[in-house]
Image (cartoon, rainbow, N blue to C red; front, side, top):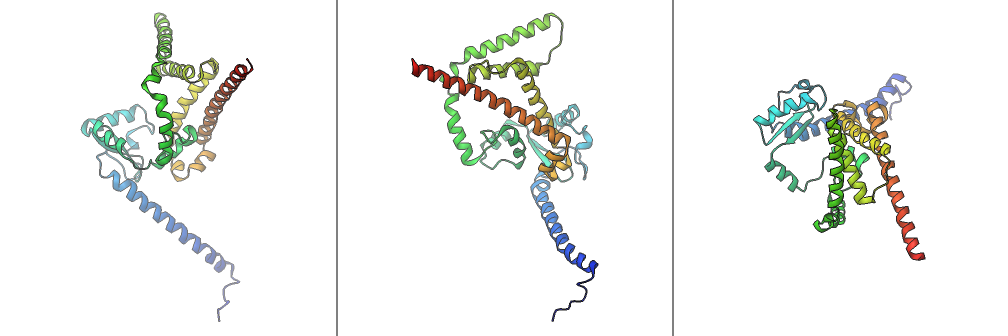
Length: 282
Protein backbone atom coordinates (compact mmCIF):
# COMPACT_ATOMS: atom_id res chain seq x y z
CA UNK A 1 0.00 0.00 0.00
CA UNK A 2 1.30 3.49 -0.86
CA UNK A 3 2.08 5.55 2.19
CA UNK A 4 0.16 8.78 2.51
CA UNK A 5 2.60 10.18 5.04
CA UNK A 6 3.84 13.61 4.03
CA UNK A 7 1.16 14.31 1.43
CA UNK A 8 -0.43 16.82 3.80
CA UNK A 9 2.93 18.49 4.47
CA UNK A 10 2.99 21.73 2.40
CA UNK A 11 6.80 21.74 2.16
CA UNK A 12 6.93 18.15 0.90
CA UNK A 13 4.19 18.91 -1.59
CA UNK A 14 6.05 22.01 -2.82
CA UNK A 15 9.28 20.06 -3.24
CA UNK A 16 7.43 17.33 -5.09
CA UNK A 17 6.03 19.88 -7.53
CA UNK A 18 9.21 21.92 -8.00
CA UNK A 19 11.68 19.05 -8.34
CA UNK A 20 10.45 17.83 -11.77
CA UNK A 21 10.37 21.44 -13.01
CA UNK A 22 13.95 22.05 -11.85
CA UNK A 23 15.14 18.82 -13.45
CA UNK A 24 13.47 19.84 -16.73
CA UNK A 25 15.06 23.30 -16.64
CA UNK A 26 18.46 21.76 -15.90
CA UNK A 27 18.14 19.38 -18.85
CA UNK A 28 17.16 22.25 -21.18
CA UNK A 29 20.09 24.40 -20.00
CA UNK A 30 22.58 21.55 -20.41
CA UNK A 31 21.31 20.81 -23.94
CA UNK A 32 21.53 24.52 -24.78
CA UNK A 33 25.12 24.77 -23.52
CA UNK A 34 26.13 21.61 -25.38
CA UNK A 35 24.65 22.97 -28.60
CA UNK A 36 26.48 26.27 -28.08
CA UNK A 37 29.69 24.38 -27.44
CA UNK A 38 29.29 22.40 -30.64
CA UNK A 39 27.90 25.14 -32.88
CA UNK A 40 29.88 28.14 -31.68
CA UNK A 41 32.84 27.32 -29.48
CA UNK A 42 33.98 24.33 -31.53
CA UNK A 43 33.63 26.17 -34.84
CA UNK A 44 34.98 29.49 -33.59
CA UNK A 45 38.08 27.90 -32.12
CA UNK A 46 39.11 26.67 -35.57
CA UNK A 47 39.66 30.24 -36.78
CA UNK A 48 42.13 32.90 -35.57
CA UNK A 49 40.64 35.77 -33.57
CA UNK A 50 41.61 38.88 -31.58
CA UNK A 51 42.49 38.27 -27.91
CA UNK A 52 39.24 37.39 -26.15
CA UNK A 53 37.94 37.04 -22.62
CA UNK A 54 36.15 33.86 -21.53
CA UNK A 55 33.06 35.87 -20.47
CA UNK A 56 32.68 38.89 -22.75
CA UNK A 57 34.63 37.73 -25.79
CA UNK A 58 36.19 40.49 -27.88
CA UNK A 59 33.83 43.23 -26.72
CA UNK A 60 36.45 44.65 -24.33
CA UNK A 61 38.38 45.73 -27.44
CA UNK A 62 35.49 47.84 -28.78
CA UNK A 63 32.89 50.30 -27.51
CA UNK A 64 30.17 47.60 -27.69
CA UNK A 65 29.14 48.73 -31.19
CA UNK A 66 30.30 48.08 -34.74
CA UNK A 67 31.92 51.53 -34.78
CA UNK A 68 35.42 52.95 -35.30
CA UNK A 69 37.07 50.89 -32.55
CA UNK A 70 35.56 47.72 -33.96
CA UNK A 71 36.79 48.57 -37.47
CA UNK A 72 40.29 49.28 -36.15
CA UNK A 73 40.43 45.88 -34.45
CA UNK A 74 39.11 44.09 -37.55
CA UNK A 75 41.64 45.81 -39.83
CA UNK A 76 44.49 44.48 -37.73
CA UNK A 77 43.02 40.96 -37.66
CA UNK A 78 42.43 40.91 -41.43
CA UNK A 79 45.99 42.04 -42.11
CA UNK A 80 47.30 39.05 -40.16
CA UNK A 81 44.59 36.58 -41.28
CA UNK A 82 43.28 37.71 -44.70
CA UNK A 83 41.02 34.73 -45.47
CA UNK A 84 38.77 34.43 -42.39
CA UNK A 85 38.65 34.94 -38.64
CA UNK A 86 36.27 34.61 -35.72
CA UNK A 87 34.91 37.47 -33.60
CA UNK A 88 33.60 36.51 -30.16
CA UNK A 89 30.43 38.34 -29.08
CA UNK A 90 30.69 36.57 -25.70
CA UNK A 91 32.65 33.72 -24.21
CA UNK A 92 30.43 31.19 -26.00
CA UNK A 93 29.03 33.18 -28.95
CA UNK A 94 31.15 33.79 -32.04
CA UNK A 95 30.78 35.16 -35.57
CA UNK A 96 32.88 33.74 -38.40
CA UNK A 97 33.86 36.62 -40.69
CA UNK A 98 34.97 35.76 -44.23
CA UNK A 99 37.21 38.42 -45.77
CA UNK A 100 38.86 36.98 -48.90
CA UNK A 101 37.41 36.44 -52.42
CA UNK A 102 38.36 32.75 -52.41
CA UNK A 103 36.64 31.97 -49.12
CA UNK A 104 33.67 34.17 -50.03
CA UNK A 105 33.32 32.26 -53.32
CA UNK A 106 33.16 28.96 -51.47
CA UNK A 107 30.52 30.34 -49.12
CA UNK A 108 28.35 31.68 -51.96
CA UNK A 109 28.52 28.33 -53.76
CA UNK A 110 27.33 26.51 -50.64
CA UNK A 111 23.74 25.23 -50.55
CA UNK A 112 23.54 25.04 -46.76
CA UNK A 113 20.56 26.48 -44.89
CA UNK A 114 20.81 30.11 -43.83
CA UNK A 115 21.62 30.86 -40.22
CA UNK A 116 18.81 31.48 -37.73
CA UNK A 117 20.22 35.00 -37.31
CA UNK A 118 18.59 35.89 -40.63
CA UNK A 119 15.19 35.41 -38.96
CA UNK A 120 15.55 38.81 -37.29
CA UNK A 121 15.59 40.52 -40.69
CA UNK A 122 12.40 38.78 -41.83
CA UNK A 123 10.27 41.16 -39.75
CA UNK A 124 11.85 43.93 -41.87
CA UNK A 125 12.58 42.39 -45.30
CA UNK A 126 10.13 39.48 -45.39
CA UNK A 127 11.02 36.05 -46.78
CA UNK A 128 12.11 37.10 -50.26
CA UNK A 129 15.13 36.19 -52.36
CA UNK A 130 17.66 37.53 -49.85
CA UNK A 131 16.40 35.60 -46.82
CA UNK A 132 14.68 32.52 -48.23
CA UNK A 133 16.26 29.21 -49.12
CA UNK A 134 15.29 25.87 -50.65
CA UNK A 135 12.17 25.77 -52.84
CA UNK A 136 11.03 29.26 -51.82
CA UNK A 137 14.35 30.72 -52.95
CA UNK A 138 14.13 28.84 -56.28
CA UNK A 139 10.64 30.19 -56.98
CA UNK A 140 11.61 33.77 -56.18
CA UNK A 141 14.80 33.49 -58.22
CA UNK A 142 12.86 32.13 -61.20
CA UNK A 143 10.35 34.99 -60.97
CA UNK A 144 12.93 37.76 -60.63
CA UNK A 145 15.59 36.63 -63.10
CA UNK A 146 13.72 37.80 -66.27
CA UNK A 147 13.24 41.28 -64.78
CA UNK A 148 17.03 41.69 -64.53
CA UNK A 149 17.81 40.54 -68.05
CA UNK A 150 20.29 42.84 -69.76
CA UNK A 151 17.84 43.79 -72.51
CA UNK A 152 15.23 44.78 -69.89
CA UNK A 153 17.70 46.87 -67.87
CA UNK A 154 18.76 48.75 -71.02
CA UNK A 155 15.36 50.47 -71.06
CA UNK A 156 16.11 52.15 -67.73
CA UNK A 157 19.60 53.48 -68.46
CA UNK A 158 18.14 56.94 -69.07
CA UNK A 159 16.41 56.77 -65.67
CA UNK A 160 19.68 55.82 -63.97
CA UNK A 161 21.55 58.61 -65.75
CA UNK A 162 18.89 61.21 -64.93
CA UNK A 163 18.92 60.25 -61.25
CA UNK A 164 22.72 60.37 -61.08
CA UNK A 165 22.83 63.71 -62.93
CA UNK A 166 20.30 65.26 -60.54
CA UNK A 167 22.29 64.05 -57.53
CA UNK A 168 25.59 65.39 -58.92
CA UNK A 169 23.92 68.71 -59.66
CA UNK A 170 22.68 69.02 -56.06
CA UNK A 171 26.07 68.09 -54.66
CA UNK A 172 27.82 70.58 -56.96
CA UNK A 173 25.61 73.41 -55.72
CA UNK A 174 26.28 72.42 -52.13
CA UNK A 175 30.03 72.24 -52.76
CA UNK A 176 30.04 75.70 -54.38
CA UNK A 177 28.55 77.11 -51.17
CA UNK A 178 31.28 75.44 -49.14
CA UNK A 179 28.72 73.40 -47.22
CA UNK A 180 29.14 69.80 -46.10
CA UNK A 181 26.73 67.01 -47.05
CA UNK A 182 26.01 63.47 -45.91
CA UNK A 183 26.81 61.19 -48.83
CA UNK A 184 24.78 58.23 -47.57
CA UNK A 185 21.64 60.35 -47.49
CA UNK A 186 22.22 61.69 -51.00
CA UNK A 187 23.05 58.27 -52.49
CA UNK A 188 20.04 56.71 -50.73
CA UNK A 189 17.68 59.38 -52.04
CA UNK A 190 19.08 58.90 -55.55
CA UNK A 191 18.63 55.12 -55.35
CA UNK A 192 15.09 55.44 -53.98
CA UNK A 193 14.12 57.88 -56.73
CA UNK A 194 15.49 55.54 -59.44
CA UNK A 195 13.56 52.58 -57.97
CA UNK A 196 10.35 54.62 -57.86
CA UNK A 197 10.79 55.80 -61.44
CA UNK A 198 11.70 52.34 -62.76
CA UNK A 199 9.23 50.18 -60.85
CA UNK A 200 6.35 52.57 -60.15
CA UNK A 201 6.67 55.28 -62.82
CA UNK A 202 7.54 57.80 -60.10
CA UNK A 203 5.40 60.31 -58.25
CA UNK A 204 4.43 57.87 -55.50
CA UNK A 205 6.20 59.45 -52.52
CA UNK A 206 6.46 63.00 -51.25
CA UNK A 207 9.86 64.41 -50.33
CA UNK A 208 8.90 64.25 -46.66
CA UNK A 209 7.99 60.58 -46.96
CA UNK A 210 11.22 59.84 -48.81
CA UNK A 211 13.27 61.43 -46.02
CA UNK A 212 11.34 59.49 -43.37
CA UNK A 213 11.81 56.25 -45.32
CA UNK A 214 15.58 56.71 -45.67
CA UNK A 215 15.88 57.70 -42.00
CA UNK A 216 13.97 54.54 -41.03
CA UNK A 217 16.37 52.37 -43.07
CA UNK A 218 19.37 53.91 -41.34
CA UNK A 219 17.82 53.48 -37.91
CA UNK A 220 16.83 49.87 -38.59
CA UNK A 221 20.40 49.01 -39.60
CA UNK A 222 21.77 50.49 -36.39
CA UNK A 223 19.14 48.74 -34.26
CA UNK A 224 19.85 45.42 -35.97
CA UNK A 225 23.58 45.74 -35.24
CA UNK A 226 22.92 46.73 -31.64
CA UNK A 227 20.84 43.60 -31.10
CA UNK A 228 23.96 41.47 -31.39
CA UNK A 229 25.27 43.05 -28.17
CA UNK A 230 22.05 42.60 -26.16
CA UNK A 231 21.95 39.48 -23.91
CA UNK A 232 18.12 39.52 -23.80
CA UNK A 233 18.00 39.26 -27.60
CA UNK A 234 20.07 36.06 -27.56
CA UNK A 235 17.96 34.57 -24.76
CA UNK A 236 14.56 35.40 -26.27
CA UNK A 237 13.98 37.43 -29.42
CA UNK A 238 10.25 37.81 -28.74
CA UNK A 239 10.93 39.07 -25.19
CA UNK A 240 13.50 41.53 -26.57
CA UNK A 241 10.98 42.96 -29.04
CA UNK A 242 8.33 43.36 -26.34
CA UNK A 243 10.36 44.49 -23.32
CA UNK A 244 13.36 46.48 -24.56
CA UNK A 245 13.17 50.04 -25.96
CA UNK A 246 15.42 49.04 -28.88
CA UNK A 247 13.23 46.04 -29.73
CA UNK A 248 10.01 48.07 -29.67
CA UNK A 249 11.64 50.76 -31.81
CA UNK A 250 12.79 48.12 -34.31
CA UNK A 251 9.23 46.80 -34.69
CA UNK A 252 7.88 50.35 -35.00
CA UNK A 253 10.25 51.21 -37.84
CA UNK A 254 9.50 47.89 -39.55
CA UNK A 255 5.81 48.82 -39.52
CA UNK A 256 6.63 52.23 -41.00
CA UNK A 257 8.57 50.58 -43.84
CA UNK A 258 5.79 48.09 -44.57
CA UNK A 259 3.00 50.69 -44.43
CA UNK A 260 4.90 52.97 -46.81
CA UNK A 261 5.60 50.17 -49.29
CA UNK A 262 2.01 48.89 -49.17
CA UNK A 263 0.70 52.41 -49.73
CA UNK A 264 2.86 52.80 -52.87
CA UNK A 265 1.84 49.41 -54.26
CA UNK A 266 -1.86 50.04 -53.56
CA UNK A 267 -1.74 53.45 -55.23
CA UNK A 268 0.03 52.05 -58.28
CA UNK A 269 -2.47 49.20 -58.62
CA UNK A 270 -5.35 51.66 -58.57
CA UNK A 271 -3.68 53.71 -61.29
CA UNK A 272 -3.21 50.63 -63.48
CA UNK A 273 -6.81 49.51 -62.94
CA UNK A 274 -8.07 52.98 -63.87
CA UNK A 275 -5.90 53.00 -66.98
CA UNK A 276 -7.21 49.59 -68.08
CA UNK A 277 -10.80 50.67 -67.48
CA UNK A 278 -10.30 53.78 -69.59
CA UNK A 279 -8.83 51.70 -72.43
CA UNK A 280 -11.77 49.29 -72.32
CA UNK A 281 -14.28 52.14 -72.38
CA UNK A 282 -12.74 53.81 -75.43
